[in-house]
Image 1: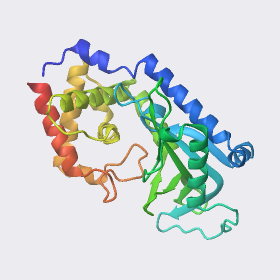
Image 2: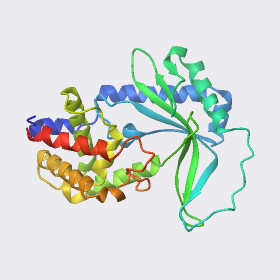
Image 3: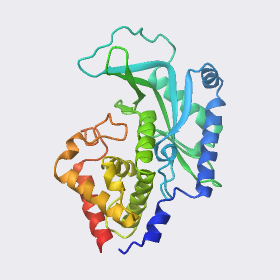
Length: 296
């Protein structure tokens, strides 16, 4: 497909102001829903609860057609922890409060159901409570009830993230604040091109899916692949040259096994670990199709 420089410049833009307004409205409504519950509101006032966004919306890499909002409802009255060998940490006191991970999920879910029309709340999700706020705004949101998590790499220092116990009992650890910090740093180091290129590739994937070139690929995987490219690949004068350079960089890394050390933008979680929602073959198929698509 012929991609003009004008098209790529347009693709660097984040979602429209209208979509941004809808997203902000959605976040405000979910916050209001959580705080309408007296128990959760008291936790919030006591700094035992934090409500914030994560994902592409929070990291300013969202594009049209990929405008879902992820809202984290995080318990901060306790934390779970892990350690990176050889460090250990055994001095923390056990939590003695009233909550379990299951009961906290149920409390958040109840607050959402009570605030919104019951039909707007999907309670069957495994890793989030899904919301469609109303027919006017029509923005989908994923609400994630979770707890604070710390990964200690010395006896006194730790990476801070979140721990989610999914409905199937499995555990997911994420580092949204670190991801945001690292993404902003890389964006500044590349003359603000990193996030623009992420948006280009997300829109490219949308066009490829629409044209039957590939199946849908998780947008976060695309963001991760771009993040693992060295900053020098963002230095080309045009977005077309930059796009081609980034795609070749990703392809070379995937084929030449550099990917074993590739991480998510938080630089903690390995990109192709066994518990990821994708694998190396998914990434290779997409990059091969993308290179063919942009060069036709």
